[in-house]
Image 1 (cartoon, rainbow, N blue to C red):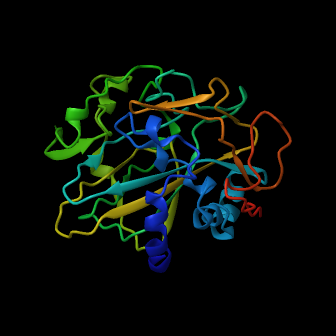
Image 2 (image 1 turned 90 degrees about the horizontal axis):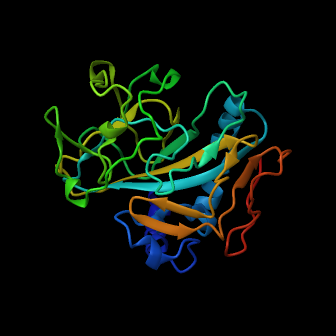
Amino acid sequence: MAQQLQKLKPLLLDTRNAIYDQGQALSGSTNLTSYDRHLDIDFLADHITRPEIVDRIASILGPDTLCWRSEFFPKYPGDEGTDWHQADNFSNVAGSKHPQIVWPEDAEFGGTITVWTAFTDASIEMGCLQFIPGTHKSMNYDESKSMDYKAEAINGVDKNGVKRGFFGYDYRQLQIDPDFEPDEANAKSIEMKQGQFVIFWSTLMHASHPHLGKTRDMRLGYAARYLPNSVRVYPFSDRLQEFGGEVSLKKFGCVQTSGSDQFGHNRFRTETVTGKPFNKN
């Protein structure tokens, strides 16, 4: 991973092949060109289909699986921790308020499987992930509610003595119970070495520690998100609206990571925009 990261850094800065228009993506606080770079960078295309990952995903979701999104999560020295949150249909920060993923009506649960890979070491002092076990079974947030974006809130909110935020949003605005507070006494910190990954449901209460700045090194995480083929992806929109930015989904496509698609209601890409075929396990 250390060797690959050195090669990856200049590719991340070069967004000419990224599927989302850089000018539109940069109009918001979050650079949406960091989304779905597995669709234009060969190493990431190989990463999301690695057997070490996909075999485990299939053991949870069933034989037919797809990857519908990937995102980078850098945390620089002095950055706040990510606030406690859960994600079910990912409509909470979308300007259109439409669900980004829709499970079948008879599904027992929602959300997505996230595979979070440490592209650098992730210690508590550098902002590693935190989880509260067992919380994936019920939602404490209503994603149909709205959150107010405030750029000045980034790195400016203190919650119980800890700098915590959600990229300019306050996740407490989505709470079903206004008095709800995550049970941090049961939280588990997951320190990771460079190249390790962790698998979790997006409905699991998760957060991250602040980067305390005791080292000048950045903490870099890469999240790839997986679903069974029965789930609809972006069924109501041809644009992605998040964190003040908006981009076209014209070049977007899911990647079949195992098995086959028996439903026909999602768009797929069989190769990257540079012509590299995706592996399928």
